[in-house]
Image (cartoon, rainbow, N blue to C red):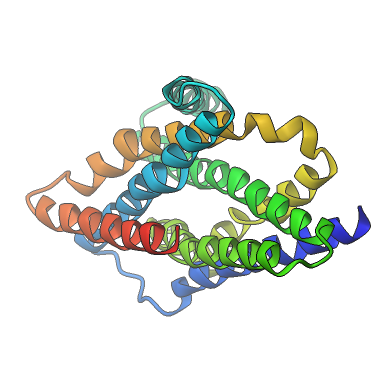
Length: 268
């Protein structure tokens, strides 16, 4: 068991590192108060999250459900709705907490709007990283338990590399929009990096309770997809297309979607 846990830490540690490197782009991209630039970055984040929801989460959820003998659309559909409802409740809760903390004064409406978008963006990407960390952790644990068999090690390594490369633009998709919305480089980087920290945490936890968790994977994958789709549709796309230069926000969405789709399909 100790060896399996160590291998899981190595695998998920790499994927976390890639998220951190992606978040580090915030130090190299010039911050600007230009609203058009902000919308391009929000659109880019939306495109990445939409593609990741489909190819990294929903499709694996359906496939894993079928392998378990279930109808693929059942956990995918229920999990999707559950994730979206969870973010809907969080949306309302954040607004409620803000009003209470300001004695019911909601005159500065842009403040809770940014607060909601920031919180929901981080939450959605973090939820997405949980099942990915679980998958990598299980894969490396199985490789360790097979006494280093070449085929098992190759499978685990390929999965970690694939998810790690995907995590690079996802880290940027968190840190860059946060930075453009006013957070400092350091804070944007820290939040982008921390969104991936759940991968080693849940990767190790999954190894410790593997038999109880594995059957939940299709549901967890779809739950994360629902959360991501909700924040994209509710917060990112409307903001990316809110002025006369909306075509630039749309271009950001398409570019982000294309990059993530290519990574998911090529490395899947």
